[in-house]
Structures are given as structure tokens and as C-alpha cells.
Amino acid sequence: MKYEPAEELISQKEIDARVSEIAAEISRKYSGQRLVVVGILRGAVIFLTDLVRKIDPSVDVVLEFMRASSYGASTKTSGEVKITQDLDNPIRGAHVLIVEDIVDTGLTLFRLKEYLRQRETASIEICALLDKERRVAPVQVDYAGFDIPDKFVVGYGMDCGERWRNLPSIHVINTIQE
Ligand code: IMP
Ligand code: MG
Image (tube, rainbow, N blue to C red; front, side, top):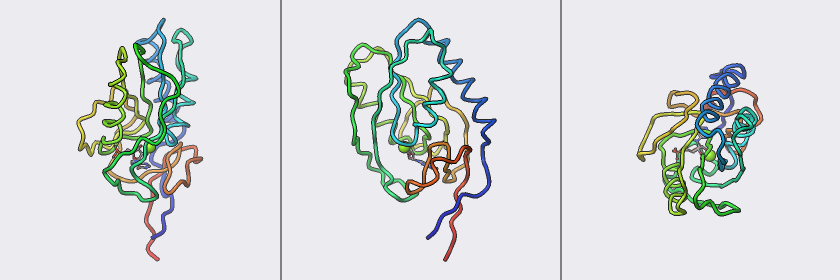
């Protein structure tokens, strides 16, 4: 099976405007406080770098990264979520914001949030650029960029078999039968 990016689903302009809105909301909520922003590698990196630069400097932002894997090279989730890279620093007593590219079944974020909750943080919120609303796990997304249909998307950090993360806008992937 071969995949190719097809029509643009969300443009650079739309992404930029929505990321600004989310950053403004986060800035209002955490102004004057320290916020540990936990980016989920690798898909959330492009979104995270745009987002944190739009957060007001009155928020004391610290960056951390984690990695979780469930998909491998396929477009279907395996259902099993493995945490393959942990935080570098303790987060006890901290306000934490998990930043993810996309929430689909919710299994990845559910597992990550449960995992971080054990560390006695002051709070944990979740920010995801895209929301597919095909929930299996009951995870609450506190800041969501766009609701999208149940289609596989690439670009703006998101991949299909590690490809197309560098596309500046978000595209649906088409399957090409050979
Ligand atoms: P969930 O565990 O089913 O919620 O899936 C979330 C994870 O799967 C995200 O971290 C993404 O990396 C990946 N994912 C889900 N849907 C897509 C997609 O359409 N494009 C790229 N990655 C996706
Ligand atoms: Mg991911």
C-alpha cells in the first residue's frame, strides 16, 4: 500500500490563528505562574514551538519532552501505548501542560496523564491541536485546536511512517492502490 498527501484540510493561516487563540487562553490561565510544558515527541514538536512562542512572557514556561508510541509505521493504532522516553526533571508540585499533536482513541493521552499524575503535580492539563473524537479512553482535552473527521492526516509535525512532518499545513492522506 502506498500513501500520498492529498487535499489540504487546514491551512497555515488557519493554524496560525487558532494557535494564537489557544496561546492567549493558556496565557490568561497561567499568568504569573510557572508552567511545565510537556511536548510529546515527535508529532507535537512543530505545534509546541509555535505555541510556546505565542504564550505571554508573564508565564514562566519550562520545556520537557516525553515519547510514547502506539502506531509504529502503520496508520492504525496497536492499542498498546508504550512510554519510551521519560521527563528529565521532577515535576512534583508543578503545573503541567501536556502538548500533543492529535487525539484519536485517547489511549495515548490517557496513559500519559495517568503516568504523570502519580508524581503529585499541582495540576495537569492537556492541549491537542487536532481532535478526532473517536474516543475509547475517557480523556479530557482542555485546549483543542480543531475537530477533524476520522481520516489520517499529515503535516505540521504529523507523519505517516515518519514522512511529511515538514509540510507547513495539514493534509489528509490518501491510499494509493498499486
Ligand atoms: P490515540 O492514542 O488513538 O489517541 O492516538 C494518538 C496518537 O496517534 C498521536 O500521538 C498521533 O501521533 C497518532 N495519530 C493519530 N491519528 C493520527 C493521524 O491522523 N496522523 C498522524 N498521527 C496520528
Ligand atoms: Mg504522537
